[in-house]
Length: 248
Image (tube, rainbow, N blue to C red; front, side, top):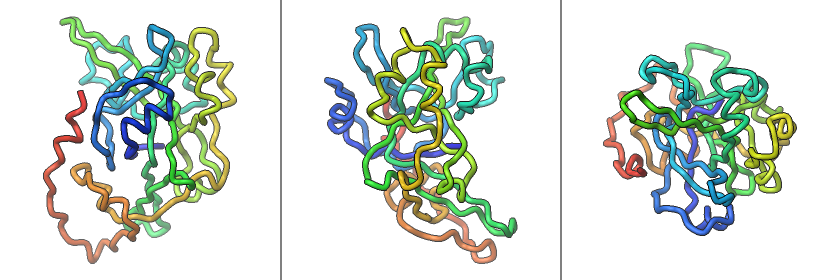
């Protein structure tokens, strides 16, 4: 699965990467978590690529009350085209979700020990794009919410040593095909929904500072090993950087 990720690229770098004319300013984000705003890139009404912010946690359009609906941050690519929660978005609202890496946790053989966190980033230090889906929900009172999720697939051998699922990565040569929801149906992009080759990513063990959503600085990506339970000390609460949420 993918429960946290980072996006450190500048707006200028993203514009160049996606061949877009303009994108709003935003700060580097080291620890993006569910329910927070995430950047998505899709095809707009003018048939050009556009960037939008949506809430991470997809709410299907048919949900009556989002408060009573389970938060969906990931969707299994193998069944996204048939599940009621995703099939409409798979047909009409496929997007790219840019990232500079994601976090995953490895469960140790000794379950008394804490999980080991890893920062998984492109081996070349560049940017990647997760395959994503977005939906627009409207309440009876006229309120609206745009939300999204990340598609996942079975991990390659390298990442499988950490976790059995990983995000689907869409490479630049496939951007146009993935985003083309007008002429390409889900079956036309099914071949894209598989794990990337071994060596595409590198995995760096980091400390358990990433476990806290309030920790949003670059220190969470510094190499480190989780402390044994017996020697763990209380973690000082850090005030969350308000800029991390000041994106709408």
